[in-house]
Length: 84
Image (cartoon, rainbow, N blue to C red; front, side):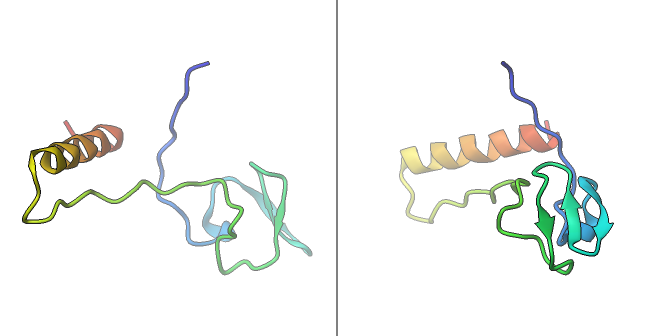
């Protein structure tokens, strides 16, 4: 089966997330995991949303391999976020 990515700004808390089902007396209900987050001010450690990794920056003394790795890593990130 093919994989897909849905991109949106990573929320800081369940209250800002479009995946939450709503707020109850037990906290926010996650629509992806069917778990409850009692602390509405933060994103729990079990949250399935994964932020994109940072751009890779090679050191000034980088060799050809390290520079190629940096170029490939950053080009892949640019294609994911829509840059050409």
